[in-house]
Image 1 (cartoon, helix red, strand yellow):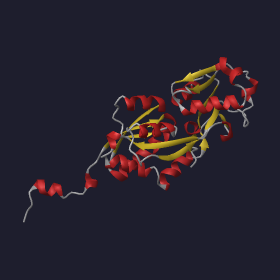
Image 2 (spheres, helix red, strand yellow):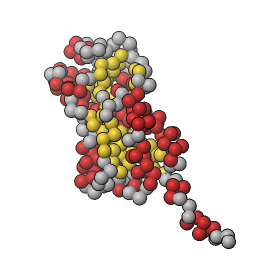
Image 3 (cartoon, one colour):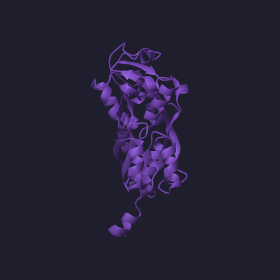
Image 4 (cartoon, one colour):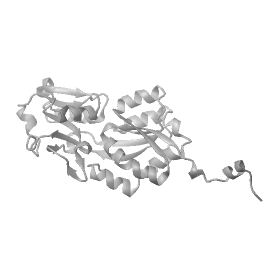
Length: 246
């Protein structure tokens, strides 16, 4: 007996339904997500719409009704706030990676392995991300304060709205050095170009980066699948190649 087409459709597995998933990605993590996205999409059948920006700005957008289903933050406080405010789904928040801060120049030999170049202060501009909007910017300020260089270097600071803009300031020569995310300058376990001082974690609070399922994604199998995918050994192996820790 032949079943009507509508009845046949009802028996299709739920996995056959492909979601389009808007994802808010902290700027430091965007290179990793661009690397992970094709594999996730091929494996799951879902499609990712990636938006990159500062975590603080994403928080404001989500509170204003932005339809993101998943937030991959650059801190652990923003996802917690969203959960407490009922905009994030309780029980879905987890630490997907811990970031590393780096002082970087695109020029070989410009940055020494101990960051002593900061104390010399013989440069024009030092780029950092906005401490209010970007956790990596906050970590950069904490580092300068720990080194007792915040007052000395204040006239030389130029702030980017996000860690992505901060990287651009340095890459284009508008700043001599910059505090960037190690993930922006590292790939396949190696520095792509220039010179770097990886800032000791003892000089700032840990950059614990949490993910959370947001209210628009509560019924999305694809959004939940993405969060599960980020916990897999394969995904974490890629993250490690960009300098992330767990």
